[in-house]
Amino acid sequence: MKKILITGATGNIGTEVIHALINLNSEATIYAGVRDVSKDKVRDKVELVQFDFTIADSYKMALNNCDVLFLLRPPQISDTEKYFKPIIETCLEKDVKHIVFLSVQGVEKSSIIPHHKIEQLIVDSKIHYTFLRPAYFMQNFTTTLRSDLVNKKSIYLPAGDAKFTLVDVRDIGAVAANVLTNTSMHINKAYDLTCDEKLTFSEMARMLSSELECSIKYSSPNLVRFFLTKKREGIPAMFILVMIMLHYLPRFQSEPQTTDWIKKITGRQPITFTQFINDNGKRLI
Figure 1 (spheres, rainbow, N blue to C red):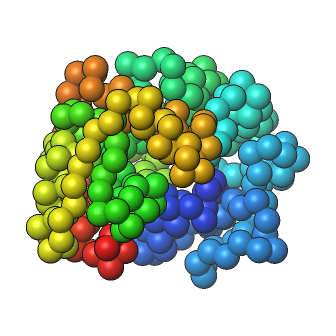
Figure 2: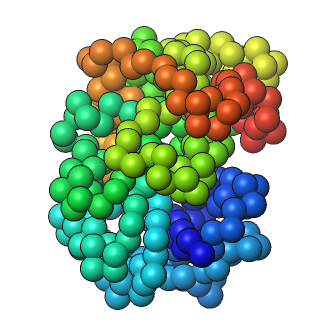
């Protein structure tokens, strides 16, 4: 029976991947990699194993007899040589057959982001892979952007008028589950995952205002003001820099393209931004 190991199993993406795997009723055995098996909880029909990116012995044990690995990068880990090279080497030692890596859209054009280096490590290993390259997460509005949205009825980001492609993490989970259970159809493939919309944050603010029946304002500060504002709010400097990279740099890059991979792989239309708002309304106001 195929053994599938999910890293980051209790996070937004990992949770959706496991949920989608369970819904597929696959005969594969699902293992959830967590930092502390005594504290973390996941769904029924899933076995917990310790997987800590910073503790080599944990992932060496977790990768025993693993056929397929769903790998993602925790936001706090950026040193790919220190943390991800040993994981890939362990995958080789343990004869992992396939790695499904959660990357980002546009990674092939940006060598400065950690995902680019991780993809290269996987390619160089000669292990079969599938790269999932999602667009901007809609769920950022229920996580990192939620405080401004709920408390100030505002979106405060240095994104200017840049267009962003979007994706709901539920669609990422559905695609990942299909790939993990049918790896032979996705060997050495890379898929950009987006919905059918490209929106500026001004347009997103208007849609949020309309659907939530309140006034959500968008403002785009300069980098100094943004950094100092978030620093005063207690946001760690490294996380502010990540936010700048995510929201400011797209202003100077070519406009991202939408794709139909979600529909092709899952057989259904991707979730729209309006649907996301309606599904999460109580968490957004």
